[in-house]
View (cartoon, rainbow, N blue to C red):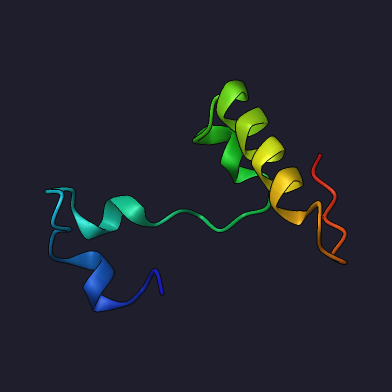
Length: 60
């Protein structure tokens, strides 16, 4: 999707270029984008949402 023409040109309705929403898609790359507080909040949210399901989702 990163090589798609739609991501190379144009803007989102927020005014940001479409290319601003693309990442490297590498495992662990999130540390370059999220603060430790944001990561902890995401971890808690995932645990809450999956708590009543049969899915096991380990977050490190």
